[in-house]
Length: 452
Ligand code: ADP
Image (cartoon, rainbow, N blue to C red):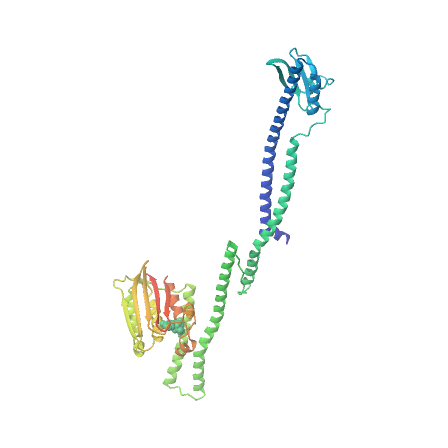
C-alpha cells in the first residue's frame, strides 16, 4: 500500500510541488540574504559617515568658538559615549588635546585598522585632526548593529517559507486529490470493463484533458457494448436462420418416412430448395467472416465496370419484368478500367439490385449509374423509386441480419446479410458504400472503388 502511494501520481505531484517550493524559497532567501547584507553594510557606512561629519562639526565649532582646545575634552567624551567610539583630538604638532578614553592606552591598540582621520579646519586653516575608531570601545555596550536586521529578516523569511510550504503542500494535496479523482474513476471503470462489464461509464466534467479522456472512454465503452451485443445476437441470429430451412427439410423427410408424403419430383424439388437456401446461408456467412477478417481472396484485374453492371442487370431482368419494374443503366462515357474482382463486384451490384427490385412496387423504376468521382474513384449508384428506408434504420442497415421489417423479409427467405456482404466486398476492394433514402420515395445505394 505504502509503495503504491509512493509511486502514485498524487505523491509525485506533491513531491514535485514541494521541490519547486523549496527551490524557490532557497533562491529567494539566498538573494535576499545577499542583497540585504550589502544594503546593511552600505547603511552602516552612511550612518557612520553622517555621525563623523556631525562630530567633526562639533569639534570644529568648539575650537572656533573658544579659540583653542579648551572644553574639547567634554565634547569628545560626549560624542564617544553617544556612539561608543574612541575619539582622539591632536593639534598640528601631534600633541593629544583630547581623548575620549584617557586611560586606555595607545589609540593604535584600540583601532588596529587605524581608524579614520579628519582634519579640523578653522577659518580655512588646518589646526589639528580627529582620529576616530568606530565600534572599537569594548567597555561600552555595543549599539545593536544594523546587520542584526539581516538575521531577523532571514529568520522571518524562514518561518514564512515554512508556513507557506506547509500550506502549499496541504493545498496541492487537496487539489491533486480533486484533480486525480476522475483518473481514479476511469481506472476502476476500465478494470471492470476489462472484466466484461461493458455497461461501465464515467461522468466527465469540464473541458480539460482528463474530461476529454473520460469522454473517449465512454465512447469506447459504448462501442464495446454494442459490439458485445452484436456478437451475442449474431450467434442467436445464425442459429435461428439455420433452424428454419433445417426444420423444413426435417419435416418433409419425416412426412415421407411416415408415408404421409410421396417422395415424388415436386417434394424432392422443395427439399432441394431448402437445402440450397441453407447452403447459400452458410456460404454467405463464410464470405462475411472472410471479408471481416480481411482474408477474402480477391482476383483483381483491370476490367470494365460498365460490362459488370450490364451483366448484373441482365441477370435480374426477368425478376424486374415479372414485377413490372423498369431497369436502366446510365454510364458516363470514357470510364477508365477499374482494378477489381469482377465476380465479387457483380455480387455487390446483384445484391443491391435484388433489394431495389424487392422493395420497389409495380411500375417503379430502378436506375444504375456509373461515373467518375474526384480523387481517382469510380462511383456506382443503384437508385429505386421504392418504399425507402426509415431514418432510424439507416445507421444499422449494413449490419448482419438487420432487417427493417423482419416479418416481411423472412417470408422472402432474405436473411438480412445482403448489404453486409456488399459492404464487406466493397471495403475489401478499398472502397466505401453508403446509402441515402427518402421513405415513400426511394433509396439510393452508392459505392465507390479506387480505379487502381
Ligand atoms: P436482405 O437479405 O433482407 O435483403 P439486406 O442486408 O440486403 O438483407 O437488407 C437489409 C434490409 O435493408 C432489408 O431487410 C430491407 O428492410 C432494407 N433494404 C435494403 N435495400 C432496400 C431498398 N432498396 N429499399 C428499401 N429497403 C431496403
